[in-house]
Image 1 (cartoon, one colour):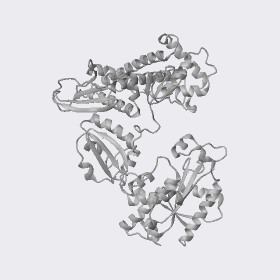
Image 2 (cartoon, rainbow, N blue to C red):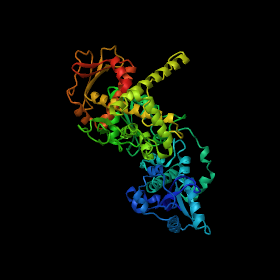
Image 3 (cartoon, rainbow, N blue to C red):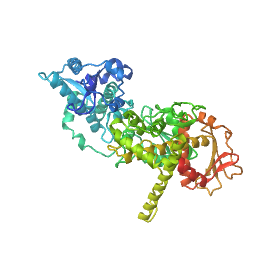
Image 4 (cartoon, rainbow, N blue to C red):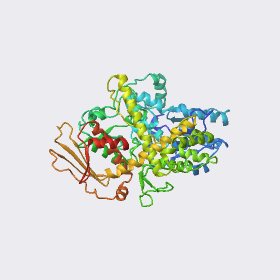
Length: 595
């Protein structure tokens, strides 16, 4: 029988692990397909059968699995038993085999070692006296033989290589569709490259082919080499695309040519997500900018506009800026006289502060609930300290910092404490840097940066001393976020001036910001008069109102770029108003506290 006319069952399983003895089967899906009929993604819902599988009574699906699959609680109201799902699958397999006039159902699965274990487990549980009904063809193994140089051969990578995107969540419906899509393309590849057109040809070829593990492991990227070698040396942003035109990734570069070509290594270690992305990237478009700083800002804006799947950090997703009341008991998405604190990009730290103030101001905390401890420390229940350890840590903290807090813990006292802890950390980092230099006898080239701790301590064991350290970390980070919010508001109405690269200090780049956006940019050979931002007279509340998530991220990136320019000694100045100009020395001091 010709492969293109062979009716096969594309199949996928989702489970909590790859071992049926320890993992729980969550979902199964399958779909009949023929290569001769083509693949129509619009009919996937009509043609595929997909069922959620009833877990054991005492089993709760872990939160990480729910997040990974996107299974929602209401879906669990419509589930079938393992027996019912298996018998429906057997019925579909029998019909598929009959259509082909075959004894077994030819079944295509991507990375079949995973699904095959569950299929055998179900067969032994419910149909042990009958023949195993499937002849399995693994599209992952076929991909390794047909596309040996492709950096990654996972379902997402191979589907993307052929031009089909997969959503973030791992569900059987979309994975079944992707498997069918890959099968259709591999059938064409087998015919064009090896003249394999019948099922017998394929079985014979697979029997004679070397093991996939012995195939060439030198990477061969889908993108035409000339495309990337002909890129300009200019700064700018680049966009990697699938063959379908879908954007995979947006990046920034000081030199587009050098940055893009740095990805394409024949061997060597690369992140798995990078290799998966490069397995799909066939096209590239670029947008040069005048400076690397403008490229960094444009990258952030484009990511929010287009949401490429391999850009995570700067996407909007569920992120939003929030503003808190002075007592931290409520927050809103817009600033007001009742909610003057912000903008913050997360509620986590300020929620911790609110709980912390309540606990620290109590004389006795014997009745504290475990959930309050988890909220305060930002830890999941399994990593939270037990109550006695926590209470001892709270008392130790109060005893040690009673003078700094003046006996009462309020927003202002926590900010004061946070500044003290930040200075303490800066001193520690400076001492560590000096020690490294003395040990090495010269500069080690490692940039001196203070790492901001967004969460407390994620430790398997606790002590009262570790509780104190967690409190210090949370207070330090919260105070930093409050300072940073004020700095972003100031920076949103400003003019940035710095030396053009390669100039002797006379030629200047000037970028003027208004409402957190680039209002204008220019290059001047000689700066006669400092540019004054048009919005310098705006009130703090007006500036807060203009800082939505896009502008917030823009100001965060701008701060990082200013720090980079300072490190390059590029004569940086910031004009905040007619009489307010921050020069390099002042900026160095400020950035230690807000970057």
